[in-house]
Length: 323
Ligand code: GLN
Image (cartoon, rainbow, N blue to C red; front, side, top):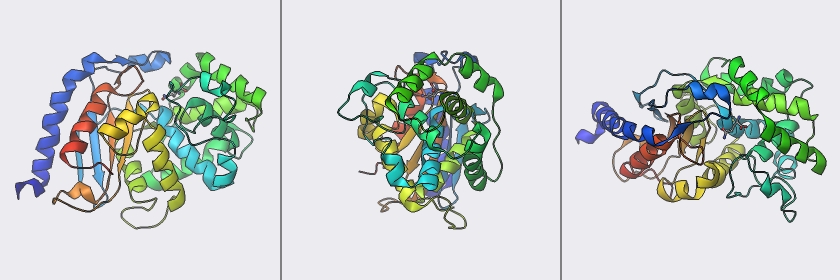
């Protein structure tokens, strides 16, 4: 069966990256954080890392980019590790908003009171306020340690992106003040926002995204050593939130058409997670994989326009949908 060979998979992915490259022209690079507008709109890359060690990369795989909203998955996990799930979920819900990621409107829906979920800005800022520590660096140390344990190196902060966001953060400030008024922030507003902007400005590679995704696919265990890095319960909770809330107000469509947990960021990255599942065909990635996509041209919701199309295609062809 020719489909089993790595070369076949590589050629297949190369062809489809080439095909979807033309869709980058339909999107726009994020510009509300001025420095992000310097990204090259026509870039598109993908990295796939199987739990079994098979890796495929294609397209623009060497461009570092900032985590942006993808960081929300990992600060949520760290907050659960530090505070326990009941404490965190007392302060942030697990319901999709159906609104833009930076929406303020849903905060006024008093029947729910708390921010809807940890992956919209209001929920993420709340979660960041729960992290232990008196300074932003102290608060983020466990996150950096978690990333270092998984990736084998300590990612750095892109200070230019951090400054750029801090200077232009009126919407997040408005959300922050609202959270102060409603009593959800556990640390002081400036400290919380500084920490939040820093977590969004952590720079990683496409391979790193795939690697992080593989650990989530493997329920929090290192795929090579099987050592637990993230408790299974937290990995599962994070994946369920990625499926229901990970792609902003396009999460429903992504679940319907792609069918795997994913989280996007406005720098153009998407982390997607395909858990191990019964093999119907002998394709190696059905044993579980993490997928990183990078394509800074975004659609109206703020998701990588070509990245989503590429993921949709591959998930369909390789039968990755968890459903
Ligand atoms: N740092 C960005 C913000 O808060 C992250 C948003 C995103 O990636 N969707 O606006």
